[in-house]
Length: 236
Image (cartoon, rainbow, N blue to C red; front, side, top):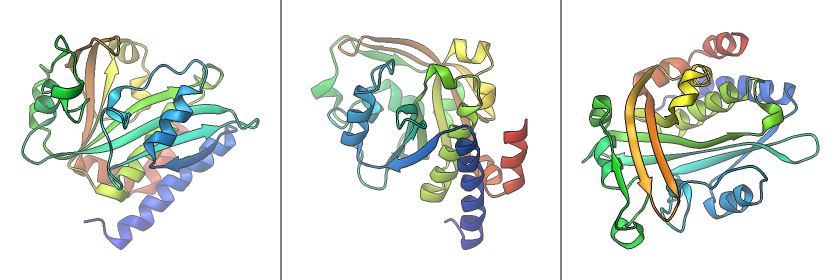
């Protein structure tokens, strides 16, 4: 359970990242209606399709179990997006959740194509159980890339996720190129492992070979409840 003192630190942590976004000309807002989120993403030029994890027609997210963030520029045009949801894996683990396709579809028997498949060979994913916060659909418009926005967005995702859920793990799936190019270093995740999701979703036209990156719940807490860590990350 998140203490009152922790919540004060979380508030300061999130505020520091929000202030950094404002300095870069981005105004952030949040929501939990994923029908609205999909409406925003589909009308955003150059933003690729949102994976079914965050689409209510394939994987509904109950109130209190997910949130999204949108950032707009001075012209009120969308410049950054991301979403986070909570998986209850108290009787499972992240690897099993991926391989069963339940990470993508609430009912794989109804929505999955017969040739859909996911393999997770990352050993650590089999140890991620309990309350697992999944961070995805991160997108930054081209003219804001290289400006530090991924670090800001991830920092806010960390803070809000900890305040809402204090999860046992927080994780994401990322393309190998983002590790090679150093993009993942900006996110602030402590661990990374290959073969997180070798994925094929036929009707979605998705073919991935992603790494899994993650923090333990204690690592997330130590990162969020110490405001000076936010200052160090933003300054680095």
